[in-house]
Length: 430
Image (tube, rainbow, N blue to C red; front, side, top):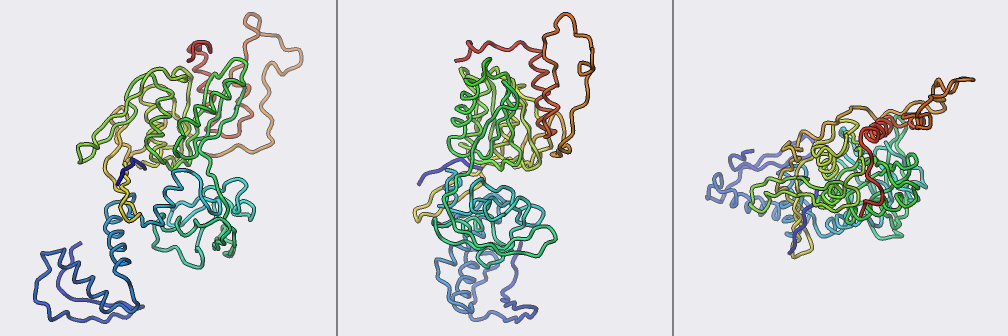
């Protein structure tokens, strides 16, 4: 077995069968042992009743798996028991490559909402869009299913057919048949926002996310005549992933200090992750953009850079998922994902239930397209130059074209930081 660090009272002896709105009650008899203070005996008795009297045949294996699953899910929303099929799907999530339709679903506001559609996927080609509500998978309603079960139903061998039923807004639900293909979820993507300034979108904290981000920044640094002057790390809608990858990314930008600490019941779960010196991006000005769906490992990154004074955080208060799940592989191919610790930022703030509060609050709205930036003095015919220092770039000129308000504000903060602190020369970077 191996482990991985990831992301009522029943009284009496009356049995009841509920069908529709009818209830048939029957008094249990013939077994004198009192089970009221013996939960293990009570479990065995219920198990026996199901085997003897349930309307359909069920195997002991199905009952035991169901019992374990229910027991674990009663603990908290993030602990789970994964049967072998669900565990294989979970491993695909960590690698970012799987056979499926190419869209991500999250449970929001009482519905299963499509939150991402991946490029060049069956979902994109057939018009599935963000905001669509997933109602059924292969003819089965989703009510009462955990996300791990829904993911398992949507995944499958490449070339097989997946049928989903979706609703968009007030439109009538529609059924779509997709042929599964190999889908690779993006981990990190980076581009120039402006010359010398990188916009880095961290979509998931998959395995090798830290190495991928470092490689993306090195590529942009080499393409920029003066090297990189700043980076915006966009972790909006990032649900988390492997905790160690979040720690690794934070370490890229920190020369020292605590990144995150964990506190749990078991002695081995009380720990601190510290940054080490010698990383290329330790002096690169950084801003982090977050929103209400920034969660888990993404909150670790935002909290670490904020509390160590390395980044301004812009956006909305984050989700507040601040627990660690330890993954224990079991001998039958199943796995136990168990919450073992709470997460704390370097300042000692619990992430769980609190999230990360941004320095600058801004929503996700975009300004209407097609609007020209406002005129400036130097746009007027015959305007005088600035005299001494005339060649300096105007601070916010290039920001006017950025429609994303959160990214614009983060960019302006980087430019202000550049004005306040002379940048370390490129040749000084390792």
